Length: 402
Image (cartoon, rainbow, N blue to C red):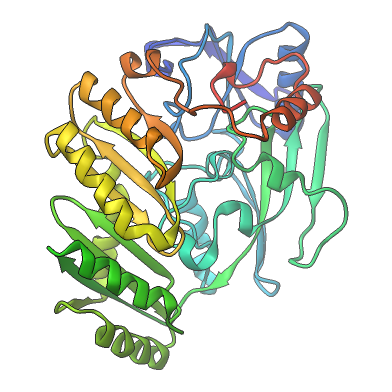
């Protein structure tokens, strides 16, 4: 039985200008495992690909021997709607999954800026958006996983129910590993009922101190927004979304309106959906460098001072979309190479932000900096895990954090 299709790489498969020598698309878990076993045996530098939406994230690759695609692993395996869990192949897109789950008024509350983002890619990068405020990242929603290891083994971790605590949580380990440890075959998630109602308060600010004050009031209150974001495109906005029963949404909106100093607009329905779609995708418009930044939520006012510095460096070419209550977001730098490099240096030298990683950048900017920044205190542990799971060092072509 044929378990994988194989072809030569083409320009359409290139990663930062590097064309993989061969493309393999397994259609079974055993086929994926066998492909990795062969690659490890023959020391083939290998990159894993889902929808290809985040292949540009990471360091510039060395020559790539093999690109392994999960495109043919694209089935929703089991939806246990009574238990609010589902198991899904890595190659299924998030949009496809949520369309299927909606048949039972359920969903996986994860945002993506990319229509073709797959479950495997979302877990491997631990990519998240505004819904992280209430529901956490994909790592937090993952309760089980099947992995194909570089030695050809298939291993399962976790289970099918939310309260499974047996064994080491390999799902948490591979979440955010950028395909450097193993290939995700399938994933099991805890799900949530679709909310009966949703509404968003959209408040604009010229006075950044007023914005920071209002954000602090919302964060310290008893309100429970499902998304609480800040954006900056020439001026600041707070976006506060409530999703629950109609009565709960109405009560929370009224309470939040009393806390916001400017007059805010209240949106729902298609207009609300469009606002959040545009917000999530705003960082990826155009070709500017996209930098992921973390900060202490209580230091939002100090962050705006740093933003002014970056504005001066980039001549105003900065856009921000971030999670107010968590302290993480994306900066888009629309400027020439020299200004982008200077802005990145300013961010990394600031005491107000940390974990500054370059997600999207030109080959020239990547050549002049480590996109992941200086190694952290856990780098020795990360390298030991890499050696354990991928002793031949073939996975992700040295593009990931480890």
